[in-house]
Each structure stands twice: as structure tokens, then as C-alpha cells.
Image 1: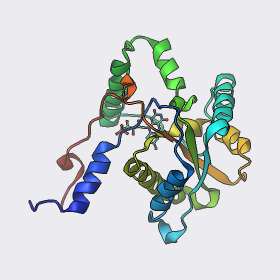
Image 2 (image 1 turned 45 degrees about the horizontal axis):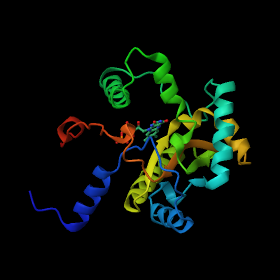
Image 3 (image 1 turned 180 degrees about the vertical axis):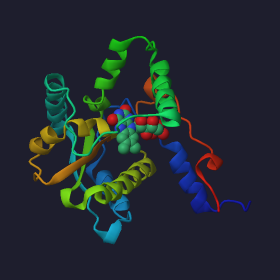
Image 4 (image 1 turned 45 degrees about the vertical axis):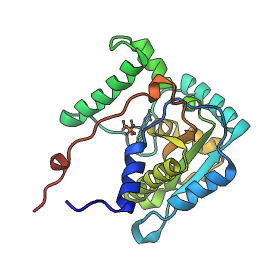
Amino acid sequence: MTAPNADVQALRRLISGRATCRAYLPAPVPAEAIRSIVDLARGTASWCNTQPWDLVVTSGASTDRFRDALMEQARQHPELDSDFPFPDAYKGVYLERRRRAGFQLYEALGIDRGDRAGRESQSFENFRLFGAPHVAIVTVPQELGTYGAVDAGGFVCAFLLSAQAHGVATTPQAALAMQSTFIRRYFGMPEDRRLVCGISFGYADTAHPANGYRTERAEVDDILRLV
Ligand SMILES: Cc1cc2nc3c(=O)[nH]c(=O)nc-3n(C[C@H](O)[C@H](O)[C@H](O)COP(=O)(O)O)c2cc1C
């Protein structure tokens, strides 16, 4: 194999250095840094260059007000209200990977596998935005359908890596899409915008056990078939 050039090394460092953050310090990210993160991420490819993603980002008191309202909403109406269908089932290797990632988190936090209340309380942290000082709500127009969401997924990935390059930690959250109607109305978004996910972000609390482990990945040969 040829030696990796500087670009490959830098990208590898960003991809392998990023991990989902589940505990934040309260310090805000400067507005210029938020703009710079989005400026880099907006170079993402999209079908027909539609760039269908749109972001609402909260800071300071607006994050706290949203956090409080979202927690109250999730307590009163825990039922799923997503714009895009959630997975029907996790089977086989997908179920195994999902379980493994969950167990890693609960082990790190000292939550016993049988401790249902402990797991639920950790899961509710999603609606507390894991204490993050900011959240980005990512939406796409309804009429672009599945591929609009695919484009937004590419944008989310670029946002995560761009944030990583700026020293900012992130949490992509489908959990926020469970409250799509509430969130759309809370921020006065047009009714035809579809909520893909949220991304809580800020500076990681690196001493917190929730941030003290890394998930695993399948090997290249498990996912690649060269023909
Ligand atoms: C689209 C998407 C939605 C996700 N939703 C959530 C979520 O609601 N809550 C959460 O804690 N993590 C969520 N995650 C994070 C994944 O659990 C995480 O990316 C995966 O376990 C791999 O771990 P890593 O990000 O630390 O590498 C989501 C990730 C993606 C890409």
C-alpha cells in the first residue's frame, strides 16, 4: 500500500477522532465558529445540487427554553411523531451492532443491563440535549422525498466532521425527530419542511464516562465486494 498523503491522514484523523458526544460543558461555541462549521459543510453534494438542507441553530437562552419545552413535550407526549418512518425492526447483525453500542454506553455509565429505569433515564437525556449549549434542527422539503433525506444525511456527516475539525463535539439525534410536529411548530417552520434529525453540539465534557468509550466498526471486507 502507498503511504497515505496529508489529505488522507487529516481525513482519517477527523473521522476516527469523531465520536458521538453525550455530555457537554456549558461554554458556548462562538457564532463565527458556528458559521465556519456550516460554511465548510455546505460544500456537500446533493442530487441536482438542490442543497435541500436547512438549519435552525439555537444558542444561549434559546437553547435552554427549547430544552425545557422539549423535555416537557416528551414527558407529556412520549409517543412517536416522526416525519420519516422509523426502522421497522433491527435484525441479525444490525440488532447485534445496535445492542453492542447500547451496552457499551450503559457499561460506561455503570447502568446495569436489567436496570430499565436507568436506561430510560439515560435515553431521556436526548431531550435534555445531553446538556449541550446548542442544537441544530435539520429539515428538508417534503416534495424531495427519500433522496432529500439522503442529501441531508450527507450534509449531517459533513457537519459532524467540520465541527470535529473546529474542535466542536456533536450528537446526531434521530430522537428529536420523534417530536417532529412539536419542533416544527415551536420554531415556526413551514408545514412542508420534514425533520430529519437534530445535532446537539458544543465542547465535550471529556471527563464524563459517557464520552469515555468508542464504538466499533465492521472491517472493509465485511462491507465491500470488489467485482
Ligand atoms: C442519523 C443518526 C441518528 C442518531 N440518533 C441518535 C440519537 O437519537 N441518540 C443518540 O444518543 N445517538 C444517536 N446517534 C448516534 C449513534 O448512536 C452513533 O453514531 C453510533 O452508535 C456510532 O457511534 P459514534 O458516533 O460514537 O461513532 C445517531 C446517529 C445518526 C447518524
